Image (cartoon, rainbow, N blue to C red; front, side):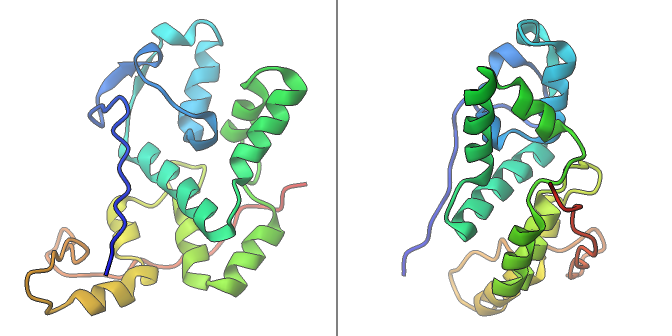
Length: 187
């Protein structure tokens, strides 16, 4: 059996640390909405000196974008970024859209995902929620129903890591409730 390990060590920074935009690198299509809003708030050209607090929620967003690409076998956010950049000559229009409350994906995409794999659709909806306060945390993702078969298969296997069997704060496993509402339909 082979296992994939996704690693991105480009400009490693501690989470919850304050950094300047000029000290971090990012790809707009994988940028979390709150980071896009902070960048735009500082103003293009001035953002280099603007402090930003890095958070695990930003990483969860980026992982959600990667997972979405793996599931739909395309890069919907990168495609939108390239289209808007081609029309305007800058990333500002894309970042403005990303930082807005406008739906991330069309209802057709969400419907396709729900028919294909409802648990994956639900996991992605939790990871790709533009509202950082409602976005899934790492524990929420690991304990999500999508990963239940993996957790079950790993139980009792000697010599295997049980990192997906994290206890919650009360030292018992829990299942994360499903996301009930998808983003509104994008026009």
